[in-house]
Picture (tube, rainbow, N blue to C red):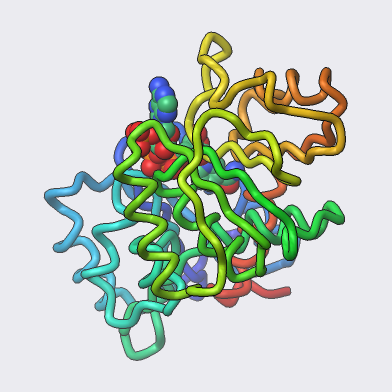
Length: 264
Ligand SMILES: NC(=O)c1ccc[n+]([C@@H]2O[C@H](COP(=O)([O-])OP(=O)(O)OC[C@H]3O[C@@H](n4cnc5c(N)ncnc54)[C@H](OP(=O)(O)O)[C@@H]3O)[C@@H](O)[C@H]2O)c1
């Protein structure tokens, strides 16, 4: 497809930027849909973020921005409108530019994870879920799991204070969802989710005690590469059903395209 004066421009905002896969993913989607748009990398360091975002208000060709590390939290204060879900989580990963230049920020990490699970036929509502991690992705997933009505959510994180902070913020929005602070022992849960970065390297330790996994559990990853992390390999050996990291991103791609008006 040729870029012309009509082409809508989108960007991925990150620092560093070389590792991002969003340009390949969204440009392929636009081509598939015959949508006249292009997504390009914008390598912006934190000290240049406010000026960059402000300048985007004036860019009438701009459809929006995908936002990733390390800007997901900082962009909240720089947009004109923030959806409730992004406000609760304290981070956004997509910004839409409206025709009048206003920038609307929202967050799809959690909805992407939940949508990916549901598309695989896994419903977390009514089930006891163990969540390893309390970082950016874990925060988003925790809010989506609470929204889905899990019967219990156990958060286990290396830095306990971050898990406690997440529990407190969840409690303000979803007071009826029981949230516990967990240990590496995941036993007694129906669904186990790894939302830490442990597993990115094959030499990483498991994010939880392998002995606490049992057949019948569903073990989900959000790490995409390697596709089968040591946790998923262990879970499979123990007879658990496994759910890989890719569906979260694939579902997010659809949600972001819808939010940004990248239609057929
Ligand atoms: N599939 C998808 O669409 C998708 C989307 C977003 C992110 N991700 C993946 O999710 C992972 C986490 O991303 P994030 O943005 O949430 O990162 P983050 O905010 O930096 O959080 C990292 C989490 O991992 C924990 N952790 C890191 N190193 C650890 C170690 N050595 N021992 C124990 N815990 C450790 C951290 O614990 P502390 O709090 O104690 O530091 C924290 O809970 C990344 O691998 C990323 O690629 C996937």
